[in-house]
Image 1 (cartoon, rainbow, N blue to C red):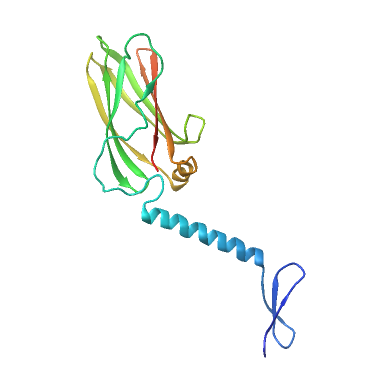
Image 2: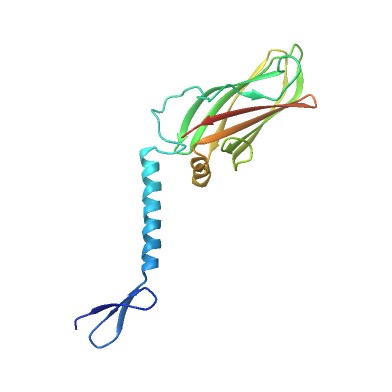
Length: 192
């Protein structure tokens, strides 16, 4: 029995054997969709393996933050009551980083009830999707005293994709609450 291939009216292709039975039908649209999905999966896999994207592989050494500028703080009268610095960022996985930062009380007096909330947004500004958020209770800080901590920023592939869609930009919003007051730092950087 020799099969014959023939087009159908709906754009698919039919395969019939000599006795007239329909052996298989392959819809072109399904083939196109499967092809596109395969291409996307191969591209995503290659991006992860080659280190392309928001969390590309580097040489694995700890390095200070590469910022697109100094952190921007909310306006206050006089010098800011706190300073915030990123000491180092180390890789803990393809979409994971351990971020060590130091908060310093720059006031001439102690502060109590100090807490820090950090939120990372995909894109240039705080209107993008939140890809990570964390809170650290500090407690009391004497005048000039510093508090150093390491937070793990572990993103899902979907969150990493949101950053990739935002051209590799993230905005980090860090709010320091203290003595019934608050101040907020903003920092933008490219990670892809």
